[in-house]
Length: 89
Image (cartoon, rainbow, N blue to C red; front, side):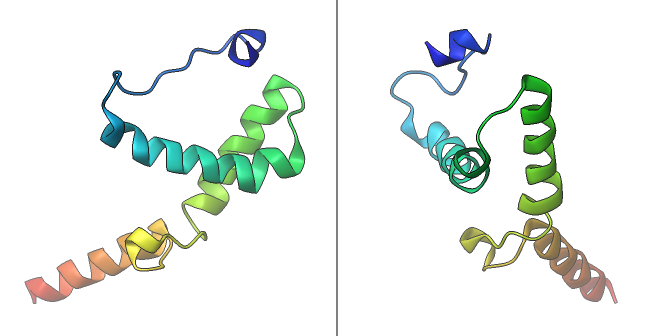
């Protein structure tokens, strides 16, 4: 009902394919806990802007991810690039 209220369509994986959904569900749980439940939803445009900022300015640049050895995605990629360039020399 809430999705319909905001004219949204739920889209994940097919029924019974829990492994496809696990990463998405983990991300959305984090998004809700760290952004939505703390700030609430305002207008659709404000919420879209807040989500974009959260993902691009916090989640990808600063938030540490246990799967990446407690590095942010940005630092993880920099480390990978440094390791690759060192391997070439």
